[in-house]
Structure formats: structure tokens, C-alpha cells
Amino acid sequence: MRITTTNVPLFTLAIAAKNGIDLKGNGVGTDSFNSADSRFSTDTRYDPTKASTNGDIATFGGVVNVGNADVHGDVFLGPTATDTISKNGVVTGTVQNDFNFDFGDVTLPGGNWGVSPLANPQTINGVAYQYVFSGNADYTLSGLSGNIYVDSNAHVRLQITGNASPSIIRVASNGTNSGSLVIYMSGASFTLSSAALVDGGVAANLSYYGLPSNTSISLNGNASFVGTIYAPNADFKMGGGGSGVYDFVGACIVKSAAMNGHFKFHYDENLVNVGPARGYVARSWREI
Figure 1 (tube, rainbow, N blue to C red):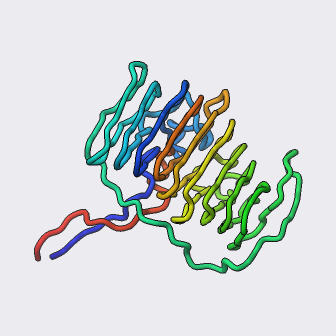
Figure 2 (cartoon, rainbow, N blue to C red):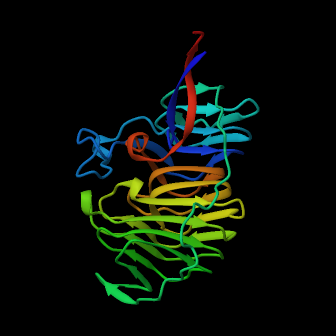
């Protein structure tokens, strides 16, 4: 038998959850853009005047509560999942009952994870950063309460073994000069109080992976996030949101997701091309 396979992208939806998605509050919504296509972005960034309707959400079990939100995309439900839509809620696409996904656990990849970064306090553009990374390396932190800056052309992998509560994470520059940051979170709780920024607006340059011991992720107040989150054992809460529309840019896969207040979620369709893959699956087969 000859079997052909394809390497399936990991992030094909705006929000995917194991056990439910709760969209509550006013001004909550999802849509999409494409950071690699100027028809659907401006200088690789999300532009509300060029937004598209692939802000799909999905849950394997539990309830998708659309509430009064505007979901500019489809809603996918697993075999035991249900949905509720309030009278002011909007789903521009369809509701489908065929969602299936393998929420595999994260494992720490190989690397020199015994190295602890030295605090390197610097003030950049008026912001005080405790850690400034200017080279390529793997590091381990027992916890994090300070701010992080990843310089142009620096590619950093960071393992955090305890709870983390940074205010600002920034990945500098754009295009081929952009830095990149990959966080492996084994601490139980991660809370961001201000912003995780990628100068070029490309979500693929900031990746967050929650190991099985990571059970809680929160964006508090007016916090915003540009990047991807894969944390299948974590409850993800997005609260507040600012007066603008640049709240979450990228994609997430979590145990459960809740958006409250004025919060907008923008899926970057280019993650299908430049984001990580979840592995090979059979595409076709025939006897020979």
C-alpha cells in the first residue's frame, strides 16, 4: 500500500479549545488578516480596513458561548460540544459539528537549558527592561516579574520553571532582521499585564508553549498580545481590552478560553505557511 502524507499546520483557527470558549462583554469579536499579503494587511500588520472573515473558533467539548460577540468566521463544535448565541451575537460563517483535534502535550525540546540569563537592565524607548537579549541562546528562569526585550536578529528560547508576571515583552525589528522569542512555560501561572509586542506585527516571531504543568494564562487590564499560544492544559483568560482594536494578533490553542470586556482577536492566516506544524497525517492511500 502506498500512503501519501501531508504536514498539517498547527494554527489553522483563531481560537481552539478543549473545553469551551466564552465570549462575553461588549465589543468582543474575531476576524482575520494575512501578514504576508498586502491586500489583507498594511506593512505586515493587522489593518481593520482590510480584515477578512476567517476568524474561526472551535471547541472539542463544552460550550461555545458567542453571547453578543461578532465572530467573523465559522464555529466548529466537537462531538459533545454545544453553542449559544444571544440575540445580538453574530456568526458570519456556519456552525459545523465535525471538529476533531489532537491536543498533544508539550515537551521541552533538547537544548542547553541549564543556563540562567544575567539580568541586563536597560531602558529602551522609555521602557525599563530587566532582561535584554542580543544573541542566540537557550535560557532558563525560575520565575519572571521583569520585562523582556529581544533585539534585532536575536533568536532566544526561554524556559520558565516558576510563575511569571511580566508587564512587557518586546521582539524588535521586522522582516529578515526581526528577532524571535520562544517561551516554554512549565510554571503553573503566566500573567501579562501590559503587552507582548512584535515590532513587525508577525505573530510567528513570538511563540508560547505551555507544558502540562502550565494551567493558567491571563491577559489583564488593557494587555495586548502579538504571537501564538499553544497550551492545551491552560485556562486562558483575556480581560479588559483597550479602546483600540489591536488586542490579540495571532492564534491560540488552549484548554478553555474566555474573552471579557472590549476585546478583539485577529487571526493571522499566514501562520498556515510560516507557523509550526502538528505532524504528518495521511492524505491518500492506494494498494500497489
